[in-house]
Image (cartoon, rainbow, N blue to C red; front, side, top):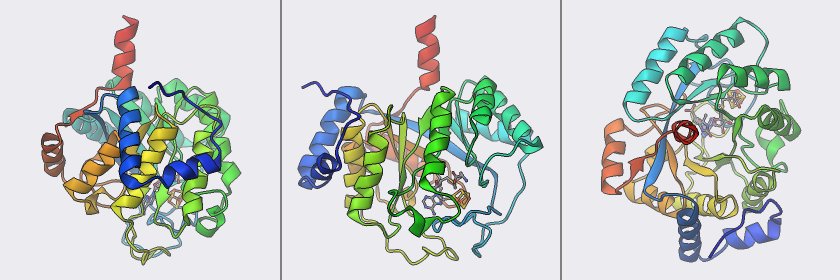
Length: 328
Ligand code: SAM
Ligand code: DTB
Ligand code: SF4
């Protein structure tokens, strides 16, 4: 069977896939996964919060929004030396992508941005894929990041357009889409996905997957996060999402965006090895490693080592490296 890449999915088609009997859905996800990827390979990425907390936005899930009273300690932009040190540690523990996150609404053209550009240069020179998630960007800022060596930019849709203003009121869906366009136009790889467990309906999950899979080009990377409910945020009491909901999201994303890296992102800390195995089976091929995501806990490095051994998985080489080799 040869699967073609489609950008004209309808909501009905996506809904039919999403609602397949779960075993058939996993089987189909696993089949498409094997057609486009080496199913033993999982990309390992490391996150670092380079500027933490104090964010003016009101994202209902986020522990870094200034208006909610969470345990997150506000921290100004980290010095470049510390960031490069952390990137070197991540590289030596097997990560091939290093993602720097800042709790900003948008990037401003100031000294902090110049410092981030310097960090991007430094990490890129270490041979890692460097990724940033800094909030909204203008086309000019995207271009500056590209010139500094940025490989990818993370900007999540988070939920469907219809559900968006239940979760965030300080910006709108079009703001999100415009930044993604600016990133794509600057020839930076797009990383965009969302969160489940925000109180959204099934049609919102399908709606978000529809928006992602009908972009002119699919995002190269699609993170699927399970809400980490943080005390002090409006969503602190949301019930835990079940593994079956994660599996349905991951398999559907894999089937409709076959080439994308589908990232099993936030929420792993509460999943057993068996639950994570189901997600890999359904088509996930990337994780965030390291004891912390941005501000919340993630599985211990040793637990992930054991997970990879048990499931016979191996960390994927950087795409960047593969591309450089092809060019020689
Ligand atoms: N401020 C920038 C932005 O919003 O784009 C970048 C950092 S923001 C923390 C990056 C992403 O983290 C969000 O888009 C959201 O998908 C995810 N995130 C934040 N808090 C989360 C939580 N409690 N559970 C799961 N995902 C979360
Ligand atoms: C993404 O989709 N998930 C990561 C990364 N992109 C930036 C962030 C998850 C954050 C979870 C909450 C926290 O640790 O603060
Ligand atoms: Fe700010 Fe990003 Fe958190 Fe929203 S998700 S409050 S924009 S750090």
